[in-house]
Image (tube, rainbow over all chains, first blue to last red; front, side, top):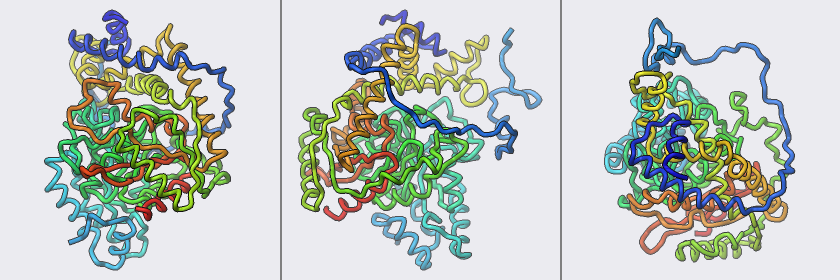
Length: 90
Length: 471
């Protein structure tokens, strides 16, 4: 892994990073990947596990929820006429 | 003066019922200690101003005869559990101004019982850490020795109970985040079976691993909380329906398996000696101790550090500066995302997001994530298979004693290794309990842990209560 890889991952993860942060992350990732790499050497057959499936879906009917629209709208960083306002997309 | 140091849920309940003191007086006693100690310990991020009103409501339950064991009991809750109308920040800057819009299932239950929620406690950012040092709101100190960490990530909840700033507390576990701070603060911590306590309203870290987990000074206190909160919740698709909460395999047996090969090295000699001594005590009390082998479990922590970041990177994508939480201005939408996330997440969260993005990315997915999922399944199978022969599996809770504040912060892998004995239970979804097992000559707490098979929490409570009498 090199600094370009870190930049690419940060781009995918939508994270703005400073140059120092990138360098630090590169170092940290190296250490962590060295540790987790031990799973590569484990020999396992394809999982033959069997799961007891249990239907947890509910019927597609509207149900009342106990939270208020106001309390959600109040959290919006930016809003107009009770709509969430975001930067222009197109 | 109420003797908070030796107070348990049942003692408090008896006293409230007899009218020795009121719910308000009990809550005030804890608020008094919080006032005195929180500045130094930083266990609470916020003390809720409606706690006394809740206590008065609880008192009415005693007056009209509807009080239950948890009525009027002062709880601390971890900062990642939603409590409607109160801030829940998950120890992160990105949620600094986030007010919960609904109650977590476990909070609903506590409210029904009339428990008093004193405040929200400090934690590693998004529960990522083993020492409560990655919080955006400063470190929490260990009440036993304030130069030491309290463990983490639920370190604030642990410190609150250990310092008598709450009678009991809720934390969450993804991999040891309640058992490890229990060990560091001299408490009992229970990680329930995956699917036992609803995750609805818990700010997620690793969905396939997270469980709400109680802290108490005694086994019985964690048992009471577990029994109250362990209920099916239709709002959480991973909550186990009653039919799956199998009681058939429940054992009250006395056969303990010890996977000695997992901790031949890397364990502090003081902890090792205490562990052996604890097992001898149980043997003398009639337990049968046998050596068992869990060959794949040595990979648990490595597997965990692939699966968890993968789930983290997915989960934390929702924090984007658009609908709630920190939002940084930018020239376009992409800039808003990047700046909000760049500024809102601390170093550990960023590290795990990148790591997760990496193990899930094209070309690495099979080598890391897919492989880890397979090894996890193998670990689960071998743990469950072990329980066909033994009733309990014992290990030390943590391989090291509580360490100094500032330690391990620059060495992620050293920090991760604190949870090496925690990982098998979280990966296999089995319940596990951390129990105080004495003190070192420097007065630091020691701890042992037991695992039991799925839905066999009772076996943990049983051995825990027995062990409490052997001290």
